Image (cartoon, rainbow, N blue to C red):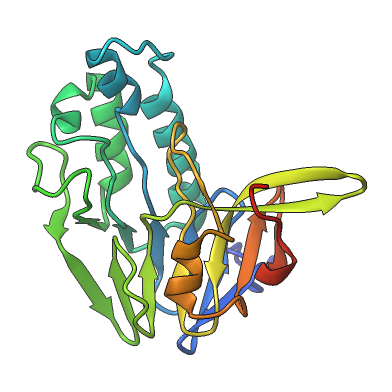
Length: 236
């Protein structure tokens, strides 16, 4: 008899330990918590393109579809019981109303059969209608607290800062989105197609971690590359 095939691997790559919880970092920019079967994503910034268009700044209007397609692949791969979106899921308060029907349907399909928690952010502080899920300012599971703006608390998983790391490799400078983490807290990379980034050598990260003794888990094509923050380059 052939062994049963599991949808998820038995050994998790790219481990990131936070407050004793072992998380699996994904090079697409999400983390998966195997023990709780929870998938976490931050800063989708859906409808950023249409937000800019309202101000006369024309960008290709495909950011939401692209972002949701990537997220759908992650949800299909991990098959979580719960998805937590860590705020700034929409670029502004009117973003949910601007979703086209195909994108709204894609979002509903991902939510089917699982809990979906929207953490409110500074770009989207109010609950939205007709996008499913539930809205909270923060939520706690076991030793971990999930919120949008990091406070530095132990056990915190947050977004907001859009961490990016720069390193010199083989004579050239490489810049990638990254997870910024020590053993007590984690700042997620921005997931949205049009989301910008903040260098981890910025004072905001030094203030948060209180030291440069944290790790930038840089996103590669197939894996994460853990680099000590003190080895990363600033913007100059």
